[in-house]
Image (cartoon, rainbow, N blue to C red; front, top):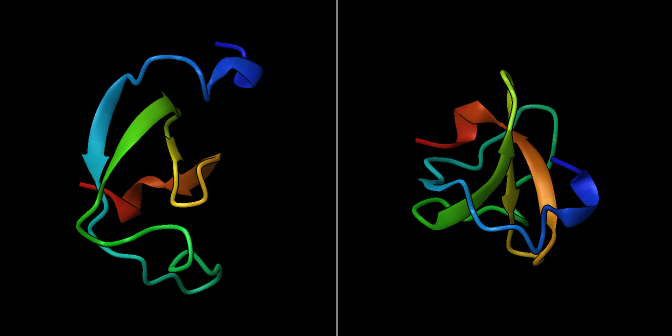
Length: 65
């Protein structure tokens, strides 16, 4: 899937954020624990979701259920 079409593409599935406590990065500004997010793409390590800013961002799978 071409990354330029991710925002307008239909969601693959939805996931729920379980925490936004990161050691290295600041994710508590863009992810809300308990909120459901649409998955636009997925790799072995990352999930790409439409975050609170309205843009597609890639996050570690450990943040989601």
